[in-house]
Image 1 (cartoon, one colour):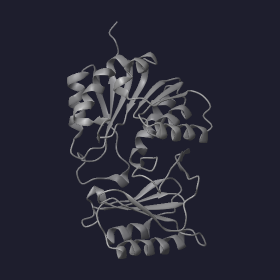
Image 2 (cartoon, rainbow, N blue to C red):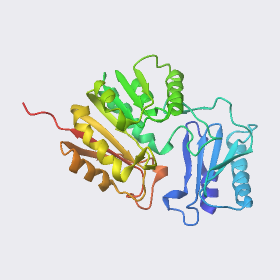
Image 3 (cartoon, one colour):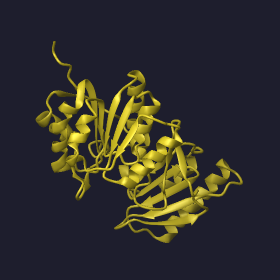
Image 4 (cartoon, rainbow, N blue to C red):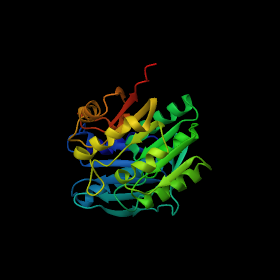
Length: 308
């Protein structure tokens, strides 16, 4: 685990929420099960396999030493999550703010690092949020559809950047409630709507809000009863041409190591051929993977303009 210890020794003082160490990318043999994230003022250490308590103590000691240099006289706050089978989360030292709010590029988000596997903000999607921000700044007044919205990070940045409206849809009313808080945190008073519905049973409602300048889809890769990428992505893609304005964009995301970017491109080619591939967004550098085919996929498509 020397690579993890070395990363801690070299880390700068984190201000935004960010990943510090990404063993899952396979660049550090022997550390594939480790990740370390900063959700200031808390660090979250995660292991995806059983590890001795001594290993956790070693990481804690390394963090304590570095933290004493970066932020003298401030306590170290460390959470450890063990995810070998089911997530077990413990507070190792320090404390977690009762109302835990983090920042990313000027946008604030409510997070919850002591419960659940997901903490309210997917750090690997930082470049996706930045792409949405840039697009909405370049084209003010956009109408946006945010499917599988989770805690609505895309919506917050879109509206901050000048979007006219965003429809956020997710099956989880709890996630959307945090999404509403995220909008309030950023003083976003209007433009966002929230619908806790099954997307595949709600195409009528979705269509009535369109057509959209941008459709974002960031579904789970496998969630029984909600979305299974290998069978459900095609059902989603088929709807895109009717949901998009001509010239509109779709940001299609997939975090399934077993499925390559070609899987998404094939779904679009077969079921929505009028959407043309534009680019694959780069992942944040810290999330570099030895096999880019396995890493997070965030692909941009554009609906061709109608011929006049």
